[in-house]
Image (cartoon, rainbow, N blue to C red; front, side):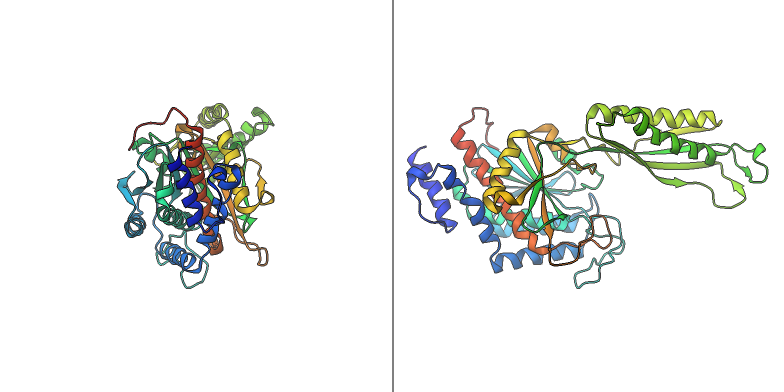
Length: 442
């Protein structure tokens, strides 16, 4: 490593209040290992923590649904401007993409989602949602805050960054395919790796969890209209009953997993919507059903989609009904399976271990939940992880998508410093390994 680079690395350690180390040791794993705990210490400072709490509460009070994050993205832009961080806006309708570092390769990206859910908050507290029927019930307010926290940490040490960090404030994760639009916008074409995280009540504060390979399932939605012939419930012989047809369709769909799928290849088909009729003595003309299907492999996912349509149309025909099936891809794009890159997973374990201790990393099992972070992972190496926020001294927290969902704000420094550490260490590691495939400057 050149003298200038050695001095640059020493400077980052010094500015992070580390102990003095010699230039000869600055490239050792021991030297690099000091970065994550120092970032965590900075993020836990009272002034830094209170700043993040204030941002998170402002976002929580004003939740916005997918592609409607006008005020949220305005808040993000305002904070980035205060830091002196350049950005592009709008990206993917309401998204914001910021840049910290040299403007030169290598490029590494950090992502946070910004959208809320269409549900009424039931938690009574000072900063409850002010928008009826909308709530941050999945922690995206915390994710956005953490990435702003990481931006602040990175900007304060910009001179020591050995490349460029791209900050992705993404709209519409909750079914709108915001990640897909970010990729299609072309703002990540030069990125070598991307990292994302999600808060979880299933882990204690200070714990993180992930896995190599398949992490989250691919997911899609379907809606079907089964049309028959309405009539008097006392004279079913003069009607064609779509309720009976739809009931048999629901039962038959369950057999796709139990009878057709490999038991070792996890899949799910759930019918969660069944609407038809409005009177006790009237057979309706039609019934609408809908649900979700999930799988960990693209092949299984495609097969499920094909069979869902076949079963619905086939069973409808058996009962002399007609059926149309809509997979809602324009409104709810299919999420591919989320698959963590092997090399990035080992890197994540090293960085999180340096920050929290190796005992505070937990290997997780794959989940049937879904994340549109997978669109990034289809385009570039990516890694997704979970950051614990459960205070073990308190009662168990509610799960995401519950109207009683809460965020333990003590998790904010952990997410911010983990983001900043992953980016800083990735750039330092990339420079020392001198890969030859870096692309041109932004």
